[in-house]
Length: 255
Image (cartoon, rainbow, N blue to C red; front, side):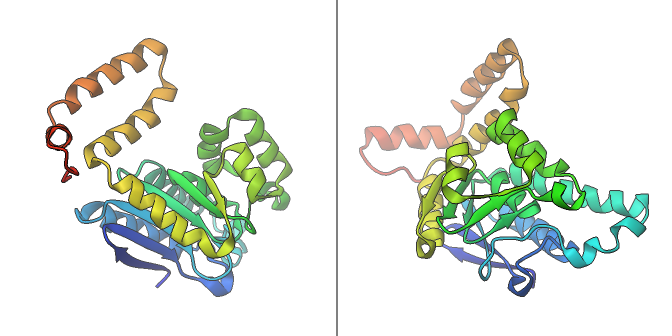
């Protein structure tokens, strides 16, 4: 299986599982990850998702064996493949439950895109991250959409136009990752962070993510209008009723 799935107290751990090839985004892995995300969303027992890679790498990006044939594949086949990749990055970036990437090793090109598409990123201090597409005549089009929203134009231009890999501390400085930890602590730290987030109200988490995705593309008035609607709607949810009751009863909420 190209994607392994396991559960830990409400957390779904998804592991990219093609370590001998450094977990490339082969068609099989892309399909497997899409299916795993679908299953995680439909499982009410899953409160958050953690994504990592098997072996020494997080993901090396494009499948080089697959790339050998793309220039001869034809427009229709290439567009179908591009749409499947688009669906994966969009699905991960807009996933309704919290997502945390545990970047255990190099995250390159599409692999960097996968990591940055997660809500939060924990990175090994020995790992590297970069968008190397321009070095082989490709373009970081799909992953660039998320990158631009994450770090802004200047950092995005530097990463996309140079194609260089950057170390973990530089990725942290740019705002690509949230935490940098020693290599042996990456997965534990990511799981701990996911548990911290998942302890909060599921409705609040989902709505907060939707607002964070929508508001940057809006004007000021539209942004405030959407926020006011969200503010009013959430007051009628069961999660808020439970949260308020727990606060006054001085007990942990049961979300």
